[in-house]
Image 1: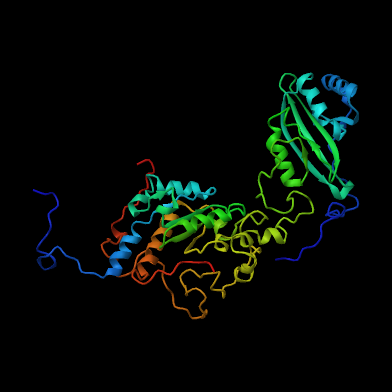
Image 2 (image 1 turned 45 degrees about the vertical axis):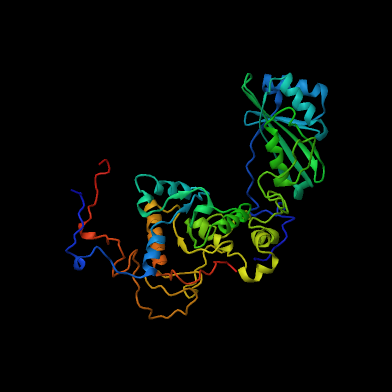
Length: 169
Length: 268
């Protein structure tokens, strides 16, 4: 006998759940957010901790990928230097639509304490950002919360409409 | 961008103008006080011209002529036992006397002594590379070029090391503004989007203390959020933040705070 039996008595005797296409697609998208490994500085350590066993990002379906072609979420974790700005733009362009960006930590949000000539004053000068996560550095719980807020944002989106490519300008 | 004020004479102006204040000086001692250093200095003086030499903080400082730097370092490495070049860089003294001060920090493990070889060069004077003597000079000299614009003779790969290759200006010069000149401020915008995008993206926000609660494009009020760019109303109703919608989510069980267990024992 199977361990998990289907309770045919509930839902009018059918193992069926009724919903909309939007909800199914967004459910799939929001629960398989594959993130690009983008640790630039100390926030990257917190991002790695979030992915490791104690905080365990895998249970959200967030699996880190080393290739932008396989990723739909970019967590910019750390200080973005002006030298690196063109590469973050290139990697963002290589990600497939739909795609989302979390700017993690003060440096990625505004340049943080690096008010100098060599630091980009916020990644939103280069790529469009969906969610700004404050903290220096944010703890893994905070990043988890950010991913869950992003999931909430994705659930609100229309899944079927033509995806307008995200552009900063 | 903030207004740029020329800083050509920044070193001539004292920040602190107490006329009774005397800047503390690290005391200098004659080289004769240390036998080992006295021997070394004699060996250097035999072959090269030495402008000045003294002991400061238990290290000998020797001022040499800029054309002799390769020879002096070769002599120190091969005959005097200073087998390590631990650091090499420059100091901007352009406002003070129109020159750079280049220093080589040498270490002898046998003698347990450190010597700082210094030389003064003009602004556009090229320096002989010592990369053939010490491999550590390779990147240090590239950094010196990157930060001060000091050109090098006989360097195998004289290229910028930290800043991008197409960077303009030398950031460690005293005349370079800390928050960057106009080129630095627009570098990433110009490179990625082109100069036309400057008006759309706007200047960098350099005031780290700036807060504008009515600017809904840059700032959010937690708990009272309005859409991006919307008008801010004073009697905005509270919109509680939550990671899940109130009515629940399709196929996902809502976390019940009542049923959760707080782990107080960290070693569990």
